[in-house]
Length: 198
Image 1 (cartoon, helix red, strand yellow):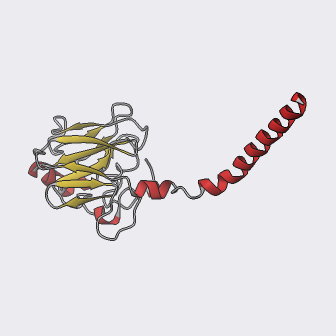
Image 2 (cartoon, one colour):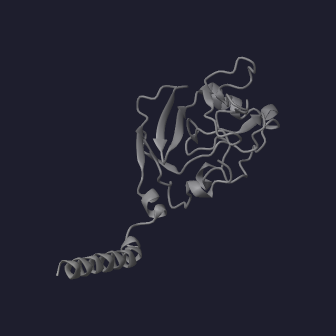
Image 3 (cartoon, one colour):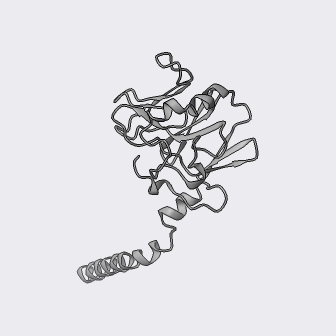
C-alpha cells in the first residue's frame, strides 16, 4: 500500500508540474512586454533650482541622463559658424535624437540640454565641464576620460574617435518646472531602442 501511494503521489506531482509548465506561456503572455513597461517608466526631474552651467544627473532605464542649464556663452559658442566645420554631425542627421530635438541646440528649449551620458565610442561616462580653457571659443561641453572624445554643450562630437553625437532620450517639458524623461513631446514616436549608436 505504501508503494502504491508513493507512485500515485509521484505521478500526480509530475503531472501537476507538467500542467504548470505547459500553461506558463499562456500566463506569461498576459504580462506587458518590455516596450509597454518602458513607456510607463517616466522620471520627473525638477529644474526650478537648476542654475546656469549646472549639471544634474539622473538614472533612467539604467542610463545616466545629464541635464544642463546652458549659459548664454554656451549658446553663442554653439552657433559660431567657424566651429560648425569641426563637428562630425553638425546638422544632427544621425538617429541620435527625436525629431523635436533635431535642431542646432538638440533639445526642446535652447537653454536645457538633456543627453544620455555615455560616450558613443567606448561607452565611458563623459565628464561635463562648464568652460574649455584649451579652446576659448568652445564654452562648455563633455570630454570622455577613456578615448578623449570631446562633445560640445549640445552633445555634438568634434574631436576624438567618436563618430556619433551623444544621444538625446525621449523627454518633454512640464511647463518651466519639470523635465519628464521617457515621455515624448507632442505626438512624436521615439524610443531609446531606435538610436543609431549608444
